[in-house]
Image 1 (tube, rainbow, N blue to C red):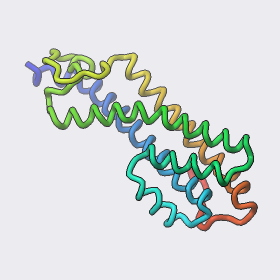
Image 2: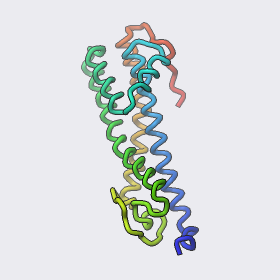
Image 3: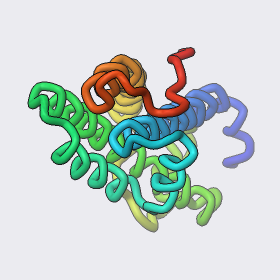
Image 4: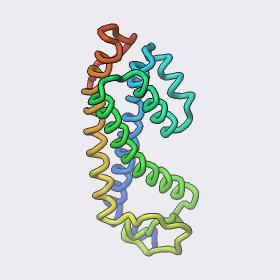
Length: 183
C-alpha cells in the first residue's frame, strides 16, 4: 500500500528533501565563514584559523570564542554590536538546522518508520510515532524556506562585514589570505 502511493507523492518528497539539503548546506557554508572572522580576530593566516576552528568541536564553542575575542580586539562598540547581531542571527538559524539534523538522523535510524507523519511528506498513511518533534506541515516548510532565505542574507552580511572588521582590528595590516567574496 505504501509502495503504491509513493509515486504520487514523489514531487513533494523531492521538494522537502531539497529544501532540507539547501538549508543544511547554507548553514554549513555560513559556519565556515566564521573561520575568516577568527582569522581576523586572531591576526593569523587562514590555515591557523581553520585549525583553531576545527579544534573546537561545537558551533557554540566556536561562537563563544569569537564573542570573547570581540571583547578584547574590537574597541568600536558599533562594530562589536554588528558582529554580535550576526552571531545571534546565525544562532537562530542553528536551531532550525539542528532540528533538521535530528530529523535526518531519525529517518536513517528508523527507515520508513520515521518520527514524522509520513502524511506530511508524501500523503501516505501515518504510522505509530516513536518520537515527534514538529510536524513537517506547510507551516514548517515555510519556516524552513524563511530560514534558508535568512541564511543567504547572513552570508552576504558576513562577507560585507569582514572588510570592516579587518580594517578595525588590523589597522591596515591584513591577515594573510583573506579571500574576496566570489558569491
